[in-house]
Amino acid sequence: MSSEPRDLYYRSQFYDDDHHHQQHGTGSSAASQDHQFDPPQMGTFIDCLNGGFMDYNSLEKAFGMSPATSSEVFSSIEGNQKVIIGEGDLHLGSDQNMVTQNSSISSSSTEAGAEEDSCKSTKKDGQLKGSDDGGDGENSKKTGNKGKKKGEKREKEPRFAFMTKSEVDHLEDGYRWRKYGQKAVKNSPYPRSYYRCTTQKCGVKKRVERSFQDPSIVITTYEGQHNHPLPTTLRGNAAAVAAAGMFQPSMLMSTHMSSFNPQEWFGTYLPSLSNNQQGSTTTTGAGSHAVYPQNMNSIDQQYQQQLHDYGLLQDMIVPSMFPKREP
DNA sequence: CGACTTTGACCCGCGC
DNA sequence: GCGCGGGTCAAAGTCG
Image 1 (tube, rainbow, N blue to C red):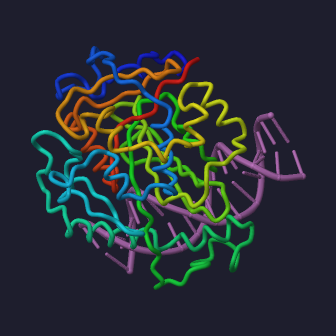
Image 2: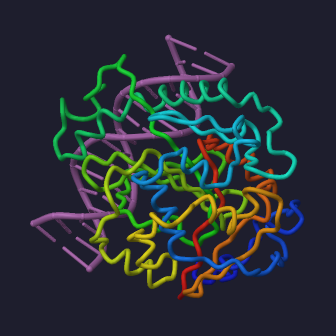
């Protein structure tokens, strides 16, 4: 693993030049243009995760989905609603194929999504509370529906997923997570890990799994929104992350929100999300690199399909944003 | 000793 | 109704 080629982080193999990249090939993607990766931007991304400053509508805006082209694709959400980017294809904003093939999207797909959501999350969430607080509400475990009543449906948290090229499965995002499970994934040699935010009363969860078609890609799915700020004591994570150049301290603190316009940034730094410009590999001030799509359309279909297969057609799929760690 | 990970078992929804 | 697969629990183990 440590022998993994470094340029995984430097190049967009995944979003290779021709929109038709078969996996990562020569990785000679449009080399670093001139997009700089400024601290506040990652902070904003974190804030997106946090949900404290931005809701999912903001996310929608942040990723450059102009109403003109994406309003049909996105269903605005409140509480447990989803943002869906296409039903079969995950084309985010792009030049031509913005609306996906089986786009029944809009309201109907949203509804379907919400329905499915409520089904799936109905069950366990009640139990989670108990375990997290150290107590268990009811009987011992494994004796049936502890906590919640059966019929009682639990609202589904909003989710979104993104894919990242990374050697490490669990990407640091500033929050503290506790792993609570791991499952083998069908048709994949790589397991899926389940994490929960360790902050009390914060029910945010995330799933992390590796693409079985391209093991260098990590698919991370967040569920829920943090109801607390970034932990200040990160067990060294913040420092480590910052040192690694993934985020800088100011990003973690996200003190720039007031002056930072996410849409502007995403328009500038992720042009592919809002138009048809070329994507590029960028360099942070700290010398780390992020992989950007050249075009959201260029999210390779296999990944889209894979996400779909995974059941990861979540509320939102965003491209890799985590820069490389420095050794 | 507390925080975290590992892991086998269990629960539940869904498709057949 | 049954089996499968996804998601979760919690005891035990590990680590700092």
